[in-house]
Image (cartoon, rainbow, N blue to C red; front, side, top):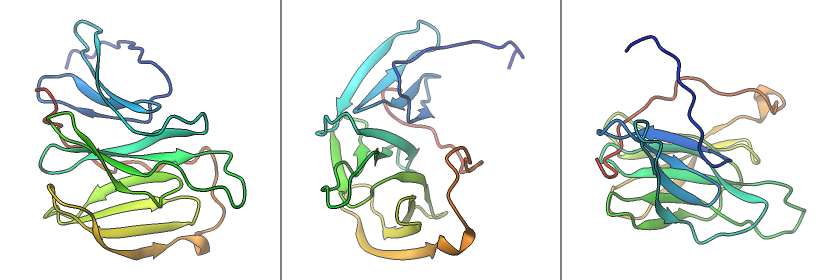
Length: 173
């Protein structure tokens, strides 16, 4: 590290990023994943999610131990009775995207157990941290409530969790 500050711009909104082995990052934008090269400033499209709605965008994300990048959506301004759009998506190193879950309204803080076999992800709207059995090549299984957070008090728009951790993405190293 040089201690020098740099400014970089990606197309907004940026929901999350993860470092790649090459020094670039993979980023979750509104409804797509891109690779951003800090050296050249190049933004390379990788894949899109199958949702294009003005109130749905990719939000928080995390790499699994096998180099897949997971990112979930947030469905803002959702009206009572309106169907939930979006979900939790996995971007593979071969650039394919698959929807892992379609029942998360506002994804936050995805993280994995030390052995990578359990995925934890918060849905801020229902104030629940879900746990799923996780395999890098398979679907999510055995969804269960890990923690109910209603008793912790109101959600503040500008409060952010810190230190969930970083893993390197194997996306286009």
